[in-house]
Image 1 (tube, rainbow, N blue to C red):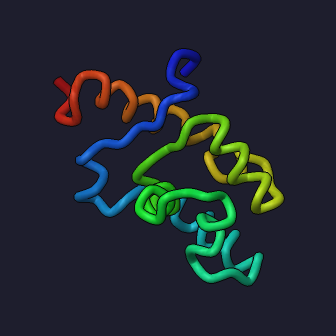
Image 2 (cartoon, rainbow, N blue to C red):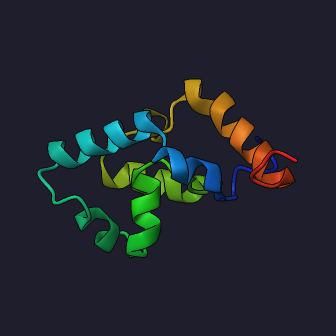
Length: 104
């Protein structure tokens, strides 16, 4: 993922599936742990609400600098949200995006 670390990926296929469940669960846990409303964090990080919603649901994997910034906000490591086990999934989605969302 060296060339793609600073890119955001988004694929329409994942919208139909409703997002990536592990990331959704992690965000829910972090938000509850910090006693926040679901979208307080995006305001503090000055993110667009729509973009933050997609990040929270696992529809978008933000660029590395933003993953680190989000993790710092929640006082955790970015690999606690975007786990190393998920890298193969993320790489697969990046590959699909490079060829188009239908995998061509």
